[in-house]
Image (tube, rainbow, N blue to C red; front, side, top):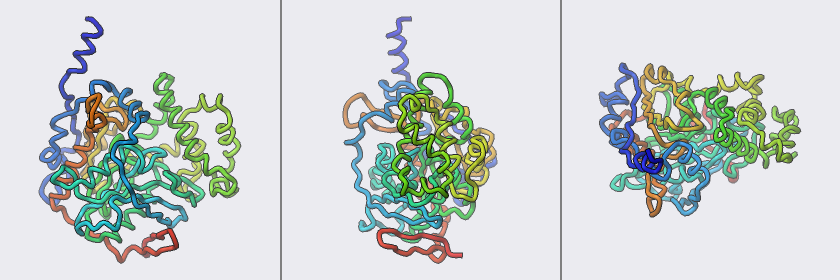
Length: 433
């Protein structure tokens, strides 16, 4: 067959079917439905399937475009930043839209959003979701307020602790939840996570279990098996090497401002201190940077300062990856949770999806989409205002709308359990008792 004819046939295929995986004995929610039944009733976009933009026909194209295209004119957002001082001395940057001065009904939803590796509220996929969280329901949105959790050291958030964040550390998210629950005691809250942020969200939902203040969660492109993802990126395949190199450089670029002598990471008491000579040499040697692997950067950084000192440093990368694996927490999640993954995602491959754990879960549903890449899911035309239209927004908003409209029991935002005090430009947040 002529290659051009074959290519034309491929790009004109209909929408690809989406597979739903869940437990046959899932817990019934207060409205009498399981999470799967609620999704089947309300998430029309999952039934309708997904068709990738003809000009981004595979996972590599979707992933690379998402990482490299110019989205500067898309979804302009002005945030109000609140710096929260954490109980461990760290600082989280909470970017809120619309600002706290904008009055919304007391029961308007609060949606917390976790960004991906070294990202922040500025990322195009985050801004796009924020727009739809804020849009009124009659326009297809949630009519709510978005709060983007910029992890410590990310998106110009000052690093005030001797450690960073990782897929196994949930204190940044938990503190943000406590703060917002105090500000908006009548508002239902839910969470959305992208990539690394999805891993943090998954673990948090599992850690909190029945006491979780979030009514639901959506996790997109979640690396549910950290070993499969990390060692998969060590593959010699040219494009996989590109992804591994890109992630390594992102980590290196992200921590470089925090390697100055005055930084907590550089202090002799920091676990990273023994690796500083090697990390600094990487910042100065182009030849060494070209050969970097994501697993090496995780070994140098995440294994040593990916969380609080009570567990860190880990002696081996394997030990860290086992501990930080979000898939371990699926069985403990007690809030309706929708995970969406693309089977052609070249970073979070289908091999890392824990189907068995999902089938045994009381509240989790996994939707696997044949196309979409990593943080892509572009479905728009080559030109025009819908060029950067992303499909995953639709099932996310449909699912959260269904949760909010199902009148599930409110998980009371107990003000008395949280204390907030102001320290200049910072709000200090902690639990009582």
